[in-house]
Length: 115
Image (tube, rainbow, N blue to C red):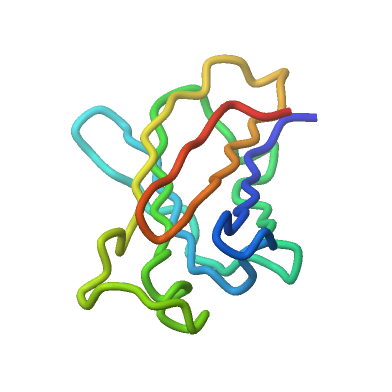
């Protein structure tokens, strides 16, 4: 079943990043359509777009990670080096599930196409 999900792992603590605000949008030509604004669950996961609402095309995820690290008690710069992490990607096949994990620390991040 298709759909779009994410999972945020805090590499500084080695734990899931719970309560992080995530915004999802889809690009339709020159137009941007906001689809959802939600927070990750206790396991750092979020179901972003249900299968029936997923379409082929470009998407953007915005992770408000600066607030997470400020609240974590870690010593971070003010303003934070990474405040909002933006990931642009494309969905090309509606028969597949799309999972976009974020591995993040206060000073760097990586992502990949998960399963």
